[in-house]
Length: 310
Ligand SMILES: NC(=O)c1ccc[n+]([C@@H]2O[C@H](COP(=O)([O-])OP(=O)(O)OC[C@H]3O[C@@H](n4cnc5c(N)ncnc54)[C@H](O)[C@@H]3O)[C@@H](O)[C@H]2O)c1
Figure 1 (cartoon, helix red, strand yellow):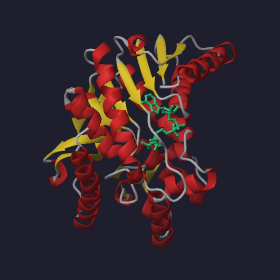
Figure 2: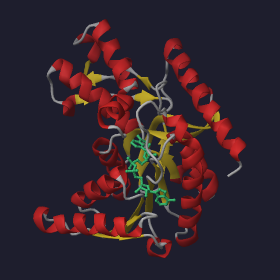
Figure 3: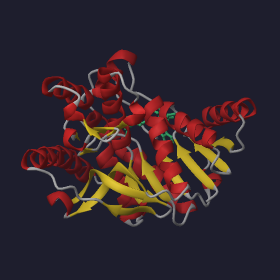
């Protein structure tokens, strides 16, 4: 694979491109934005960093989809982010049109890309890209779970005073306040987290994780970008290296977890062809209920999207 396109040169897109370039895995990263000069500037600034940090990936910026031709992987970050007081779902009327238009334009120039959606509301925007692309479900999915587990792992690392490198965790459901962090699937170097932290403190961390995005929107006036950009780049890297890594990703469900026709966060295996396997965990009753509640919340937004006829 030799070409990755990132659509949206804003906070998340530019960060994803920069982190990816530092991994030095791909010949060319194209950053496309409706503001072409802005995209060119971000790409040029990032590429000048190559001389300092030592990577060979070429970054270019554009507003012309012809420059994205024959992309192997496309990351869509185009759209508006939240402002304080907004939920991710409030973004739908603007971002559904943008993500649909972007996907159609990408498909005019690339035959069989893998598309990773980042724009919010994530689960429904991934659905919109899936529909607009006509690609198989293994090649269209969304980034949220890596970020949400990263937040969960960061909070646990701070509480336990251990490196977040040693914290393994899984999280399911939609990318919203109904997301489902799974303490039963959380370990610290193989030690069940419940052996290291009290129930109340763990529950407080789960709740903080669910609202982790909102916490940052409140602090910064816009949504986060370092961890989201790095998370998207990590997915791209797993594909480029054909790593078959297991990540929580937003994937299309057809009966799994009792859900059908909806994109939702679940564990998947990622490699050169996109999703090679979707893993179904043996959830207990309480976890399954939380998963269904989260699916219901995503389905409400999905209905709004379907009513828009974009
Ligand atoms: N999935 C996640 O976990 C996650 C995390 C953080 C942010 N997000 C979402 O990612 C999106 C981007 O966030 P951001 O902070 O980078 O926003 P931003 O405003 O910094 O950047 C968005 C960019 O999209 C561009 N854009 C708008 N319409 C476009 C179009 N039609 N074609 C091409 N480019 C277009 C804008 O010019 C802008 O540069 C938001 O929807 C945000 O909610 C998702």
